[in-house]
Length: 355
Image (tube, rainbow, N blue to C red):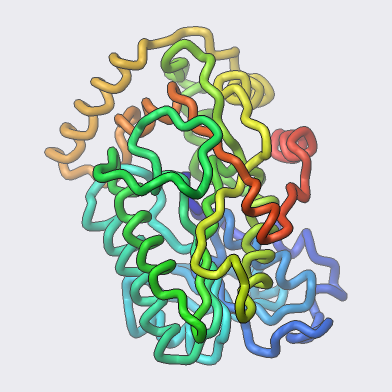
């Protein structure tokens, strides 16, 4: 549901020594460093690894220093996207940005989400425009078009809803509108919407599910028949790099958003049970009706807000909808405009994740 955060320890294992020492601009790539905000996170670290593999110069910006990324050849800069001065220093000298940094979690204090997701994006764009950046790939989310309704075969013509069920979706929508609205002849922008990312290094989706399963608290919400889209993290990283390469003068991709996920949906609870049982926990058999889960989510949100707790409640209205409703998306436009296809097939992706 979001870009997430993870350490970058897998980067140096994916690159052999020759690849780690490839000079900037090798193979005709641009001579300027490509900035990845949130570059040490779940998605960002995979993007950084792929760019380093092909010989690009990479600069990552995040709250921590990532020694494995540095060892792989990345220029690591520390700071918060909510800090305009720190962002400007990170952007200076770059001509392309992949903006992955975002607030983890879906609920909690709206102000924190607004600062990280919207103001952080605004800081990146303000610095980019003033310092001559030419291309921006913005990591968005299908949550920007989801107000809890069933979505079956949704495409990029889906409108933004008037209201959202969580601060994450609301602020990511503001950020996406800003990024796409800034597209121009001199500053090309694009938004990528990966859905329900999973894979090695995940610190959000899979660990939370397994933690609930381990405590015997994971319940199927609804009738268990809902279909959803999922996206392996390497396939999402591949899409971001194709998007970056597509942002040339006159590109039909500039100023547009693209869904990125498996071309065919999966049954939500079959998928969850496969992950849960592979981790050694019993299959999820107990269930709760969707209206009850939605009501519990509403109560949890109100309670955590009153207690001023920053973490997500165990259940929220948005999560209840994600676990019970259909939400799957077509990828025809990404195939047409970006030439995207899954680089790793679902069965292989699952084996790698479960390993």
